[in-house]
Amino acid sequence: MTLTVPDTAAAPSRLRPPRAFHLVERHLVIYRHTPMVLVAEIFEPVLYLLSVGVGIGALVGHVAGLGPSGVGYSAFVAPALLATAAMNGAMNETTFNLLRKLKVDRIYDSVLSTPMSVQDLALGEVCWALLRGTLTTTGFMAVTAAFGLVRSPWILLAVPGAALVGFGFASVGLAVTTYLRGWQDFQYVQLVMLPMFLFATTFYPLGVYPRAVQIVVECLPLYQSIQLIREPALGQVGPSLLVPAAYLVLMGLLGLAVARRRLTLMLLH
Image (cartoon, rainbow, N blue to C red; front, side):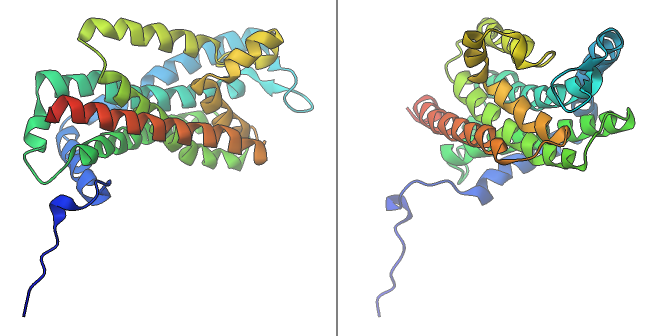
């Protein structure tokens, strides 16, 4: 009788979520000792909401063109800040923290000495960033509800929406980090992130721009993220939400594919 042993070395490379989640478990064990780091991420959008949403909102009043009587400025800004919190939570994890793990702590050398592969590593980091971003936005959503800024029960769609935002930006952040030469290169990341935050309809509607600028803004991932969360938050649910959802899924898959290839070159060659 001949015993056939599977040739795992010849098996095609594929993602293995169970192994990837071991990395998520590792990060959870570490962060349970520093929970305030995660809580602190909620305060940044809350401060923006208080200073811009409430402060400037008292001068602006209502934003016209959204519903019969318009929308209060705070209720208009809050979903955008929620999307921004998801973006920042995911990007912080896969840029600053990942560069430290990759080039300073070099923990991936240890990780790859286990049965985990580079693919598992990449997916694990994206899943962790997605979880972190979702927790941050859920906490911020609770704050907006406490402020009385929730206008529709469809706001609950913001949770899976934030998860999609986290997936898209975490994957791209992971891919971008593999090209960074050192800490000084984060200036280039901020050079992209800050203008996108300011101009992707975070603080005012798309209609204030000329049509040519509107097309550019509509191509920004943060604009699509804001649309995915703002529309259900204002009770506007329809097929139009499929566009930003598909945008972020494709963005995440592309970023993950690039990150996997780059990490393989960096860690195994």
